[in-house]
Image (cartoon, rainbow, N blue to C red):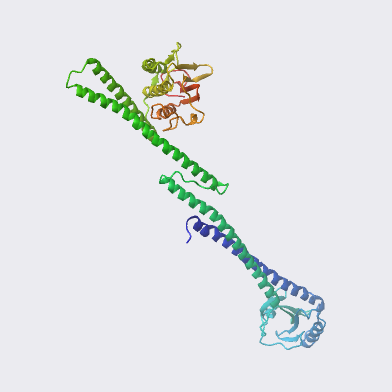
Length: 487
């Protein structure tokens, strides 16, 4: 019937609350009984205190004299309506009563014997008399001037009314405790339901998301942690939906990117195979081989990019770090891409600095891959006649720990909406330009592995600027040296 949070709540919180309320109610009932009994005892004690003056220095040593003295005291007793007073002889038998009725000799007068053995000279007794009435008695011992016991005065009061009040008050305490417990259970049940119901809804939504249903929505009912969790799951579903869409688009783009070079390779291979039966002119042969080689290289690049992305995602990318001259590596990449820029009618501008830059510590091939990806993107999104400019800076005074490489193009630019997402996996801002959409993501991860950064600034129609920052290599004295490490 109960499970999960509800069960834990019942067997932990509610049991503790029940025990606490039970202990409090029991303590209150016990305190009520104690206070009422103590009040009766106090009243009996205050009445018996007058015996000290009535029988003070009592000289009588025979029963007749004590009987006459006790009779006089009983006849003049002021509280006959509240309690019964009796005279007890030295043998422990009741000889006189304020009611005038004889007393049953079978009644147990243990309070008289206890009073004789008590240092205080008095004792209390609770019990039920022959009539069935609950009573409390106090017996005060009377001694003569020689200290001998000649009798006692016994006060008897009914406590049925006291017990009735105790029962009423105890019933009120029990009912109040049950009512408080009911309110706690009621409020706690509502609170538990306010948690369990949304959690069950969250669990069901999570299961739907796990099955691939990212369109499910959660209603935010409370402005608390549950509400924040609902918002988080809703945002997660939206992100997963966007990621799923980007992944599908990525698969579609990659399929297209793979199909294009494969189609070109297959087409020219079939052409050359068919032409092999007859003499193929040199120009056609060279053109076909050029296309096959070019598209094979392009295909290899796509596959390598996918493999790099997979290594980064699984944390298996390993850098072969060494001390290297970053200007030399960048120069090689620019030289490799300059012919392409010329063929596409674009201007690739790079003036290699004349000063000597400090070395960096990194993977030569991976850093080249970053340069190629960034410059390739700049050329790809720059129209014919546009400019791609590369600049390398090292400020030994203001920023002696980093080398910055800036690649600026005059291309179409990136919108403010797309700019924060261009480094995410699968994301591609411009669907009209060929590419898998993971080049920048791979480049950014490689820079992070080198403890560097890749920052992008762009605006629609004003071009894009990519800034690469790499830490320089230093030894423990802060001088550029042979030590392999970055401080």
